[in-house]
Each structure stands twice: as structure tokens, then as C-alpha cells.
Length: 72
Image (tube, rainbow, N blue to C red):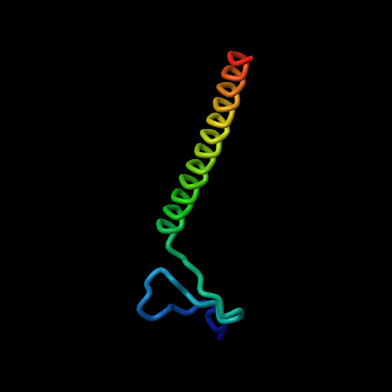
């Protein structure tokens, strides 16, 4: 008789422990997909913020150039 590789983690449905490595593994596909969605949204938000910061720096540089040109 072969021993089961994974055992349930008591009090934590959706998680199992790998008997070989001792790792805790999330086997709840819905929660995994939800976590991936959250991560994608955070990455997109960070990229959007970076683009806005770049745009603002470019606008600031253009304004400084315009002001300098008017004062010369």
C-alpha cells in the first residue's frame, strides 16, 4: 500500500502539506486565480503610475523650457 503524498492541513481547508518537502500548498484553484488577478491589477496600476510620473516630468521640462525662452 502506498502512502498518500499530501495530507490535509487541519483547520485550513484548501491547503495540504507535501510529506516529502514539508511545503504547504494551496490547492484552492479559485483562490489561486483570485490572487493572480489581484497581482495583475497591482502591476498594471504600478505601470500606470510610472507612465503618469514620466508624463509629468516631461510636461515640467517643457514648461521650464517655455519659461526660460520667454525670459531670454
